[in-house]
Amino acid sequence: MSDTHAHSVAFVRETMVPESEPPVAERGAIKWIRENLVSSWMNAILTVLSLLFIWFVLSHVVPWFWHMVWNADSLRECREIRNEIWGQGTPSACFAVIHERWPQLLAGFYPADQYWRPVLALILFFVALGPVLFSELPRKMLWFSVGYPFLMYWLMWGGSLWGPIAVAAGFGIGFAAFGLIAAAAGTLAGVIGAIAIPIVYWLLLAGPIAGALAGAIPIGLEFVPSDDFGGFMLSFIIGISGIALSLPLG
Image (cartoon, rainbow, N blue to C red):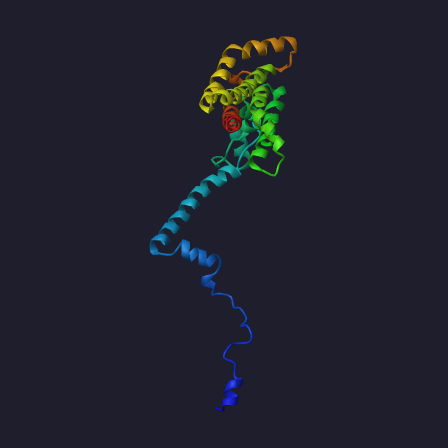
């Protein structure tokens, strides 16, 4: 081969080779199954046993839900409807009690004409949580987040509006006491004062002040005792209260 011909041959490819798809066993669902479900004989056995268990559960649960009865006045009527439509002995869920009593299951014995109060409290909870979770929202909304726990209490339990306001004022008094005492006697004294002064206020002054304001300017809602809340609503309130109370305390 002459030197001229040797120099005319390129050792580096000047064009790209068209891409080719990887083998079927190395892509997509087949690869995932091979690597995660049947990567060894033990995994293959466990996969088969898991599929059999899932089939066993679904074969019993799905027919039970598929043959559900929603409208009936009693369990006996549920069975009569089932026997008439699907035959005696067919697995069937009787959900008539849910259809009939769903307000009681959700709200307990909370007065039906006051359902708007827990609904509004739930909506306002998400409004109060917004500025805490999303910094893009206006920072002024944090004042609503701080005041929401007291507003929620008033909406749910009712009574005079001045009670929650008097309690909330204790936190403001504690904040002011910390600033004044810390400036004069140091941070530790300010912390002690910020704790002790609101406690004294709540024990001795909050009640009489709230009572006097309620007598002068009566603003309130119908009082609903905790016994009327129901288990589901009470559990929901405890969860929301734990989150909401962390806002002003934090």
